Amino acid sequence: MMMRANEDVRHVVILGGGSAGWLTAALLAREHHAGEPGGLSVTLVESPNTPPIGVGEGTWPSMRDTLRRIGFSETTLVRECDAAFKQGSLFRGWMHGRSAAEGDQYRHPFTLPLGFGDVDLLAGWLQRHGDRPFAEVVSAQPHVCMAGHAPKQASTPEYAAVANYGYHFDAGKFGVQLRAHAVANLHVRHVLDDVDLVVPHDDGDIAALRTRHHGDIAGDLFIDCSGMASVLLGKHYGIGLHSVKHLLFNDTALALQVPHPAPDTPIACETIATAQPAGWTWDIGLHNRRGIGHVYSSAHMSHDEAERHLLAYVRASGGTGDQPTPRRIGFDPGWRERFWHRNCVAVGLSAGFVEPLEASALALVELSAAMISDEMPATRSDMALVEKRFNDAFTYRWERVVDFLKLHYTLSRRDDSDYWRAHRDPSTQPERLADLLALWRHRAPYRQDFFRIEEVFPAASYQYVLHGMGFVPEPSARLRHPSLGEAAEPHFRETAHLARRMLGALPLQRSLIDHIRAHGLPRG
Ligand SMILES: Cc1cc2nc3c(=O)[nH]c(=O)nc-3n(C[C@H](O)[C@H](O)[C@H](O)COP(=O)(O)OP(=O)(O)OC[C@H]3O[C@@H](n4cnc5c(N)ncnc54)[C@H](O)[C@@H]3O)c2cc1C
Image (cartoon, rainbow, N blue to C red; front, side, top):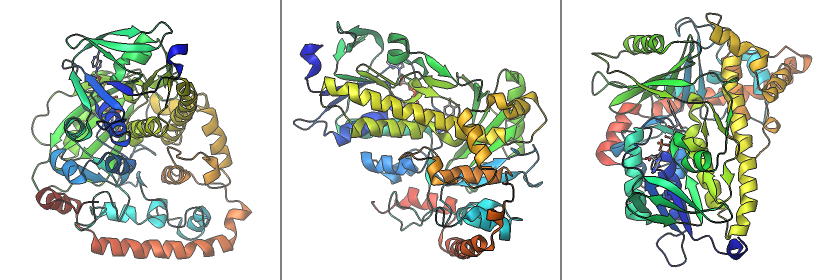
């Protein structure tokens, strides 16, 4: 170890060719000059026998920045990965288990409310517009989504937005395109082989990965992107999983792909999350099909029953013809007790997974890859410092993901199953969330509730979900003070004005996607 402490970190080896592996490989190669003299060398090994998981089709707006950083064209994403634009999530049936027509729906748009942090939007909404959905009063984006409009125009350059957006795309095709880009343009060395053994140094660091046909692949830093198998961190190092099944109960998903009935079927602008008796269904609109799935707790519902609910959803939402048998994916909600150990760091499913609600998994991949790239240790001895910072940052982030996801469940008043009643049980609430909910009885969430730079979910997201779910603070004298309503009103007027302007200027999502497929977008 003493010998290696001052050795430069020059060769990064990534195990796994799913979205996590290729995004990380591309970012490191691009930002550390792979293929140039003095640049980092990046090798990715993936098994020809274990395909990537093939789900993970909804992203956050952060993906735009990631694609820009790795130089991956948005036009390619739309043309080759069947991508469409995602402007947030639409939640149905989460409050009472009723239908959208009965008012049981709300939106969590990606755009921050106008005036957020400058005026008390909560007080203004309660005083002057409390009869309308919070999100529709404070943001123009719900109006854009309701009308099926795209978040940008045909002349808006790649990655740039009129309204904030992420993507819905075909995860399998995304992996293939990322690989092509990383290998052809970014000098990532690709080895298609199974890793059967980890070759250690005497001190316990990893020296190399032994492959079946390509010998040993040596490296200085190893990134475990091997999916749920967690070959390096979980299996080799025995780092256990910190389970959160007692807080978030879902542990199984059924996934299907459903073609659009006609080539001109409108493409939804949001992920549609519909609550079910023991979980929820996702509905993700791409150019040519929808990705639909049911994620549920197997302790509360049998797989057969879950499949019946999924197929009933598909039929009720316009799916036609016979549906193929859904694919079943089991998972243990939680994350590794540490993510970086010695000269190995896990990114993606090998680091953890809690459930697909609010699509935070790829965002955590992007944050992990970015932190590894930004803080790439120069030498082996620097690695110990980065390891500590990384573990601290990502333990905090995973905990905040659980808080935010649990918020969706704990505020529900559904009483139709043990599942929903158990979600309301205070013993299944994370402590920090319980404290914040107590504070929010008298005031709105604000920035200082989430004080780290690059919080996974900002205070505004909490506010959209809180008030969307019908949570209204107790009417304190402060919240009733008329000056707060007066100060907020100009922002509400401006929001309504902006919504009208956007509806006049933005094309329908389907027409923009068709346009991009035919003509492309201006380069960003
Ligand atoms: C039901 C479900 C829905 C989801 N929905 C979303 C969503 O909407 N949004 C979102 O952000 N995320 C979502 N996710 C998470 C998302 O799918 C993953 O974060 C993402 O796909 C990254 O996966 P991965 O690359 O870590 O693993 P995988 O795709 O599983 O890739 C693992 C790779 O490791 C390789 N490998 C494994 N063992 C070996 C070995 N011994 N030798 C060589 N290679 C090996 C495999 O060949 C493969 O290439 C969802 C997950 C699930 C389960």
